[in-house]
Image (tube, rainbow, N blue to C red; front, side, top):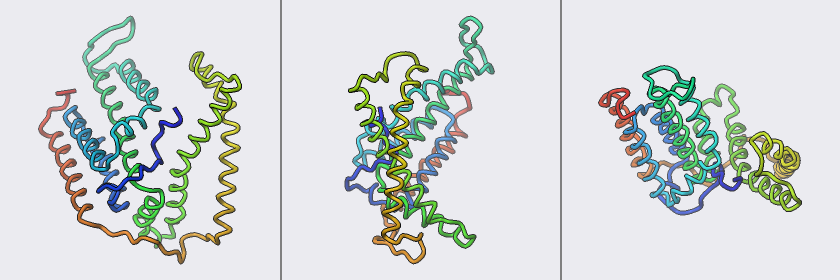
Length: 273
């Protein structure tokens, strides 16, 4: 399960999506998130799905890789669906199981929230898969640079976020190694109920935290030995520039946003879920 987490991983291929300006990709991801929350019917979610699928094809990233990143969240998706299905009492009753009522509004909320969570994970995973941590850090810092006039630590914040994203797959790989080592010594992480599985994860957390603090200390010493003192006076190997491909990507995202807005006016609320 640990190796299924794609957030923070980079898929190194040459594609039009990989060549996009990281600042543009961050903004487009934010707009995609807005589209996800504006969609209110299955037609809107189908448009978002088609956009993400098309972007993954253009990025030469297998769509199953995006689905692989959703796999560790299947319990959260199922819990979100069931909680909204059984605990939403508003609307017309569709089915009654004992004292539990299933209503049309509860079913609608279950589908909406589950699909929103699904597309949020897939959209952000696509951004990190097509953007290296260094480029993502540069793009984030450039977007936050106007706040430097207000003494906002834009470089430090971008650096912290890029390091956090970079170490997500590293820590997951380390956790997978520790888990396999303990399973080889007789540890059982898969049998029993949910509480028993959570209790079995405690021996995994201690060496994982020790490894994380050791890596953090090594990184801090490496940065200090290279005279790192923040972003003041630093230069960049690559200069970020917008290209025609960025313009085409903006047009495609603007078209999606307009279609989602039009869907809100043309499709009555409650129709097609």
